[in-house]
Length: 147
Image (cartoon, rainbow, N blue to C red; front, side):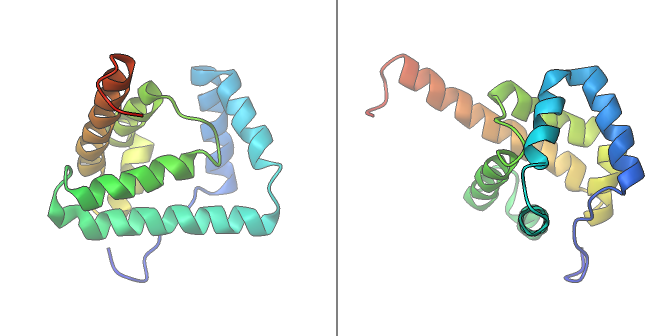
């Protein structure tokens, strides 16, 4: 990805199409996301989108370090935090996003436009991130971690 190429949000028509499909797939979560998004000012929305773009740009730049590198995993923690502008994602949701970014033709095309290998890379990197979150949760539940 060239330095002047940013992650581009979907057009209004694409977004409406995706929202309708998402409501069919995930129901109320999508409606809650839309309500939350509508609480932000235009300036806040622009900042949120810029933050997302910067995260994906940094992920592309970090691809040579590998999907399980500390750098990539830290960027995925940033990505995870960024998702909270829209909804609180469960571990299962995060795993599903990793799959969807690769398997869904529209999402795949969006990420492949940034770098042809990004969809597969995100699938692998997010799977590792989710595995780490699941391990930490299990260790906490079993009392293996000090709080």
